Amino acid sequence: MKKLIAILLVVPGLALAAGGGAALDKAPVNLHDKMSLQRGAQIFVNHCLNCHSASAMRYSKLSELGLSEGQIRDNLMFATDKVGDPMTTTLDPKEGKSWFGVMPPDLSLVARSRGADWIYTYMRGFYRDPAAKSGWNNTVFPNVGMPHVLWEYQGSQHLQAADKGATRLVLADPGKLPPAEYDKYVGDLVNYLVYMGEPARAKRVQIGIVVIFFLVIFFVITVLLKKEYWKDVR
Image (cartoon, rainbow, N blue to C red; front, side):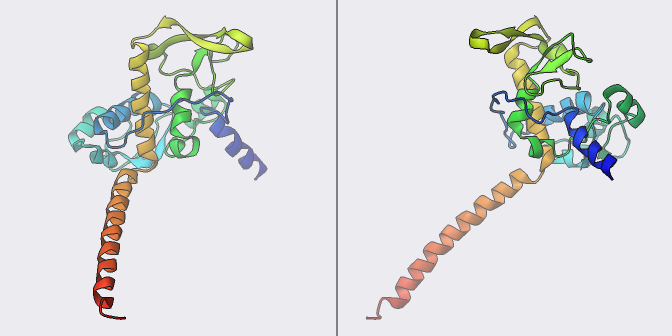
C-alpha cells in the first residue's frame, strides 16, 4: 500500500510539475473554435499519444469536433482500428519505466488538474540544460523528466541571466515555426486538452445560458401576473 501511494505521488511529476514558481501566461482557450480543437487533437495524437494515454477519451467523441469517422480513422487513429476505443498509448509500461523512471501519466484530466495556463506556459518553457538527463529543463517545472517533444517546432531556448538575479529565456536556435506561430500551435494543443477534460463543457455552458434566460423571462411574467391579479386588491 505504501509503495502504491509513493507511485501515485511520483507519476504526475514525470511530465507535469508541482510548480516552479514561474509566472503563468494566459492560454488562448476557446472551446467554440472547432478548427483549433481539430488541430489540437492532431497535435495530441502525433506528439503526446506516443507516451501518454487519454483513457477517459474515446476516438468517437472527436466527431463532436466536426470530424467524420473516415477523417478520424485516416488521420488520428494509429494505435487501434476501432473508433469506439479509448485513446491509449502503445508504449510498453516496462519501456516507459526504463526510459523515464515511471510510466508517463494519463492526460485525460490534466487540464482540469493543472489548469490551461500552467500547461500553456509549461510547453513554452523548455530550455537546453546539459546537466539534465534528457538534455532539457523547464522554467515551470525545474528538473523535469520529460524531454521537449516539440523542440523541432519551437527550436532551442537557453536560460540567460537578466537584471537583479532574474533569468529569461532566449531563442538560440529557431525551429520550424516562428515564435508567434509556435505559441498558436501550443494554444491549439492546450485548447484540445481542456476540451478532452470535459467534452460537454461548451454544451453545458450553452444550456446554462438558455436556462438563465428562461428563468429571467419567467420571473418577468410572474411579476406581471402578480400585478394583474392584485391590481384590484386594496
